[in-house]
Amino acid sequence: MSNPVIKCVGLQKIFEENKQTIEVIRHVDFELNAGESIAIVGASGSGKSTLLNLLGGLEKPSAGTVHINGTEIHRLNERRKAELRNRYLGFVYQFHHLLPEFTALENVGMPLLIGGVKLSEIRRRAAAILEQVGLGHRLEHKPGHLSGGERQRVAIARALVTEPKCVLMDEPTGNLDPHTAESVQVLIHDLKTRLKTAFIVVTHDLHFARRMDAITRLSEGQLVPIDEAG
Image 1: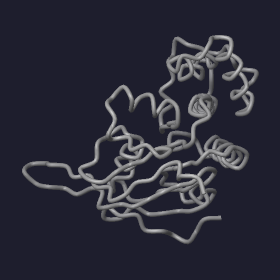
Image 2: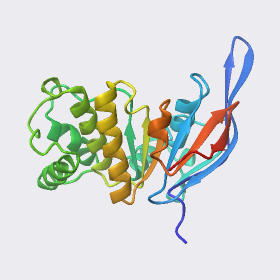
Image 3: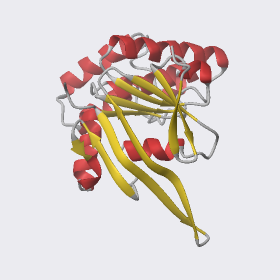
Image 4: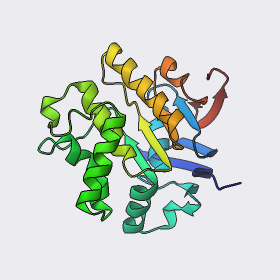
């Protein structure tokens, strides 16, 4: 059996605040295989985004390990971490963080450009993934000329263009109106079904969470499975 695309063992994160020790993440063990998806729910301030940042190598744990495709990411220097993230991970946030001066095609192609891919190949791959998310007719539009839902679709395409092993999503529909949020959630569910990519989704929306293969709640720094997925 192949290695999990993402795995953590004994993961812990402690913050020091006003001379107090706050244990946000408490010895979490977690793994996800190719094509699997999981939603992480929990109260505001429970540490969901912190956990996602630890899994993505964006924050350093106080203890424990995180392996991405078999490599322990927190043992790497910053350059190698960035290379590993660019190769194996995609990120989608509540706000799209698109570069306003670039077109949809250029925004989506940016991770490939950073990875040293040839310009002709960047254009081909970026156009193909934009077609998959329903924006094949909007390639040359800049973010200011796209709707909120379209901008988030561009952000999702950007996360997928490198064909990552795992996509980490932090409230990807939290800033959208209900109708647009529903269409983006359907898109994400369709993509996870068609692609062999693992998805980890942090969300407050239980309806969205139920579209994933499993749901877990972050409570008092630990992940507690919820038998509601389907």
